[in-house]
Amino acid sequence: MIVENWRDAADWERVVAPEGCPICRRGRPLDVLVELRASWATGGTEAPLPGYLCVVSKTHVIEPFELPDDERAAFWDDVMRVAAAAVSVTGAVKMNYAIYGNTIPHLHMHLFPRYRDDPYRGVHVATQHVFHRSHEDLERLTAAIRAAADPN
Image 1 (cartoon, rainbow, N blue to C red):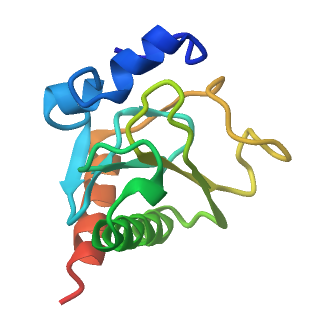
Image 2: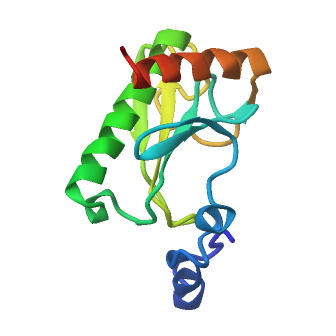
């Protein structure tokens, strides 16, 4: 369940516990491309920008500071590897990082590769534009993430 009104205490309490979390109830997020040490890298065929990815913590917490030290370090390492992989595949000139969690209160970070010609020039990324990605696009991202996750 996604919280429609996160200011409603009853709705919030229902989803902040792992039993009510849509990610935890499924056992993993949707559109998983790669399972990493502390997270999953996800990306579907529709996205707000080419190369968009989301890194979802395997541990149910709402805030990054709630993770134990070793898991927190692993989560940030996963995020950095996924971001670098996305930039290597897309040629983005900048990566934007966003943690919200007020509609799905389970730690996840949105990665928005930015391009000189993207439709959000001068503003933050919104969901008014949808880019359709092919399975080949997602396979290239997956391969780059796997390579970044295991540099040996």
